[in-house]
Length: 114
Image 1: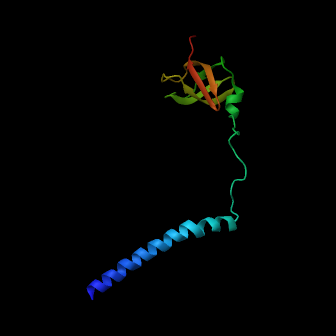
Image 2: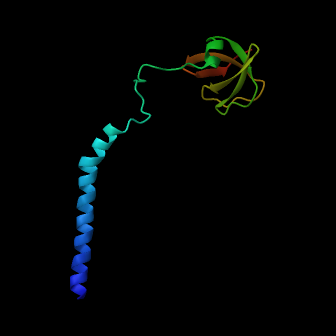
């Protein structure tokens, strides 16, 4: 009686596994065509957004560190306080910096010699 119950249980597990595979293989892909979900209809490959902060500054402008750059922090350039990344060095507050590169929404600065 124990052997019969074990065989029946293993048979049920194998049958459930096979039915699950069949469901995933055949029914689920067709269900996706029936339901019109909130899917993205356009391709975003060519889209990008530059930061407003990066557009306000230009390469070569000089500013001052407002919060420690380790390596990122806040820099004041003109009247704007922007997020910036230092070029390798950790810079203390009130250190003069120069914008060396703007890459997308990243403003990269380096220590400026006064």
